[in-house]
Image (cartoon, one colour):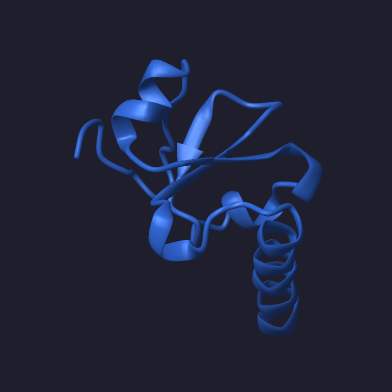
Length: 80
């Protein structure tokens, strides 16, 4: 199980780098194009997002303005 989580985290990092998105320091939250939730990148639900569906947000406000709501697992803030 731990190995699978490490692999998912590695794949998420690689996907972000390959897609030309900002480094981890430039965003705080992630979401999926197929969901209405936003998460901390370390959330177990976020680690299941396929790279093609991954969306990043710099702030909670940005996620909320895009129509996303906080994940009930990792509980990111409504505003930051």
